[in-house]
Length: 268
Ligand SMILES: [Zn+2]
Ligand SMILES: [Zn+2]
Image (cartoon, helix red, strand yellow):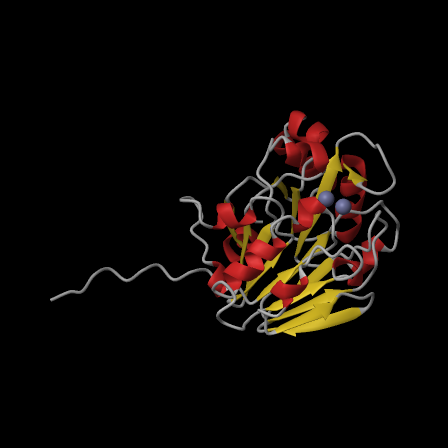
């Protein structure tokens, strides 16, 4: 007698994009979903930047992600497109506050003044921690490093997520500056690209991303956090152009995309 077919084991190293919108207009109009991404490395799961709709997208038919399986929630910064659902996600991660578990990491200004992380919700988690320049936190199999403070209109950090098999570097919202090229090295590089043409010195435009990819030379680059001008310019076509210009395989993330990193990197 044979039993039911064994479930396919979940890949230990994945990026799961709940949403790919960035910036106020793209999020307000929901031109793309917002909600950040889950990084799963060595089986440890962290949710980065749960923007508006993150909880709904977790439970969507296409994703079916269970927040109770999260090990940590990380905010690169306090802006709404990164933090809109942080309290809802904390409550979901802790089974409505009944199970004290999980870690929350954010810059200091997410906890103070006009805090985006509500005080009563902080009681639910096992621990809260601060992101600081040069700091690191170990969460299960993932070492979360914040090597360099970014140039943005709130206290903001990029991330290096060092897993047992590979490292995912993520450059969050920032203007370009050369130190980014040495601080955010990784096998996979995720870049928040809000603007197609250059607009400000507090966000990357496509040209900045191309320059960073060419300098960092990851095995795979992924563009996400698209503002209005990026969405209109067809990010998948722009990513192909960046691939050709840099020789580095570059993808434009899609809403609800699950990327098995081992498979994606072996394809390179
Ligand atoms: Zn943003
Ligand atoms: Zn921002």
